Amino acid sequence: MKLVKLRRLALGMGMLIILGGCSSGSKGTSPVEEKETVTLTVFDKNSGSKIFDDPVAKKIMEETGVTIELENPTGNPEEKQNLMLSEQNYPDIILIEQGEVLTRYIEAGALLPLDDLLEEKCPNVIKMYGDILQKSKYTDGHNYWLSNWYGEDTEPAAGVLMRKDYLADIVGEERAGSTEPFTQSEYMGILRSFKERHPEINGAESIALSIASDSNFTGSFASLKAMFGMKTYYEPGDGTLQYWARDPQYLESMLFLNELYNEGILDKEWVVNREETLRQKMCSGRVFSSFGAYWDVDGVNRELAAREGQEAQFYCYKVVADDLEEDQTTYSGRSSLGWDAIGITDHCRNIDAALRLIDYLASEEGQYLMLWGIEGEDWTMEDGKHVPDPEVLDELIRDFDVTSDKTGIRKWTWFVKNGNGSDGTPYDLVTKYEMSDTAQFANSAFDESDCWDIAEYSGLEPAGNTILGLQWQNVADIMRQDYARIINAQSREEAVRVYENMIEAMDNSGLKDCEEYITEQYQERLELWGQK
Image (cartoon, rainbow, N blue to C red; front, side):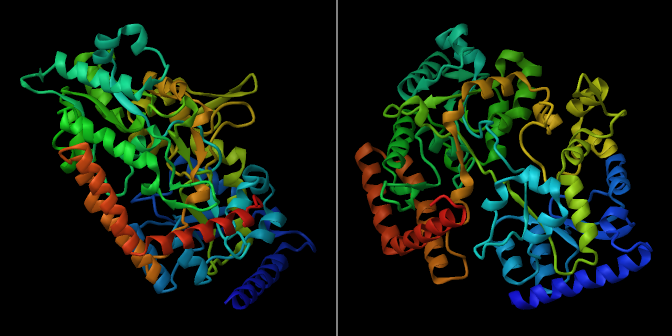
């Protein structure tokens, strides 16, 4: 497979040299340097029905000499990706999610190895990505894709949400406005006080804590895990990785919710809550607290602020489990590899042009173009710094979708790097340049000790179409069936029994074999990354 792929690559490069070089009329002149106008097709799973015809899109094509024909996903993007692969009918450049789909494309030989090509043709990629390229190597040691939304991002991805006005009524305005963490015991006392002071709100029973049930343990449960210092896997300290439910803190977190449930503090309907249901309850004004990232409730906060005032918004606080130190929580888990993968397919008609496009978009100039817009129209340089046009920024904040579609700002998010450019201004204008009060508070409430890289743990589980993969799915099904029974148990003793029975059932379903496989994959990854 690899030999065929390399021969195909060599043949394609040879044809490009013949076709591109002969037309140049100058021996040794690279097609990349001449920026010959070519057309490339690009599939972006996130593009929806967008059209590549806005000012930013036109500027990209002007700067690179590449006319882009966008292939939008139709219906379910994953189904489209699988169909393209099975029919071997895919575009020149493709943006898909990291994970099983990406692995299938690599194993099928659909993506070109980029190592030597990037070294030779893409200096901006090498400069901007740095050691991320080492982390994104496939198991054979080659780079087949480039990360999107990559690099360090210290912004908190989880937290404990509390309405500031209700909190101030309980602990005082000074404490409610402080970023000092609360302990688990303090938080539980605050929840009880709220329920005592406000048994009813607007003629309906109040809810001290409401969460969304999520079988994938993201959303609400990501904050719960972080509060108790848990990560993707439990690491007992012997170099192995174990299922996170084996972590002693997992049981403690379940008992924490079980106690609140039996006291009538936790929403009795939490099991049937979905994200939309939870947001509706929070908008009603009768919910005091929930779990999640600060941006999860932006819409809720806008409605509450308009109706009840700025202090009625949900702010994101740090709560520390009673048996942990402040620096042991894990609220800011982010993947340095981002969440998308962009590669050049083996169907690419002009590899040089694809590399030229990629290198420009990945450069600092390309990043500011995509995320800030056109210089002189959407932003200017003042004293060596990017400064957005106030009217454009205001329009983006007031109506992002319409303004983005009109200007092209942040409409195309390809090869995006987290953090700031060389002048200190953030690449991501819309969410990082002028932050809301709730965003600023959240970023102040959590420190670097909460940051950890999810990337080293991602994608280690066995593939779904293998025997181990089926065992892994059985384990997940057992968790899905039993975690609610632990939380809703009538007593602490019953909750412990349900937990112990759950772990036993997981072991009987092959969990230990899966853990051995995951540990082996993890050790191989560390070796590949040069961390072992």
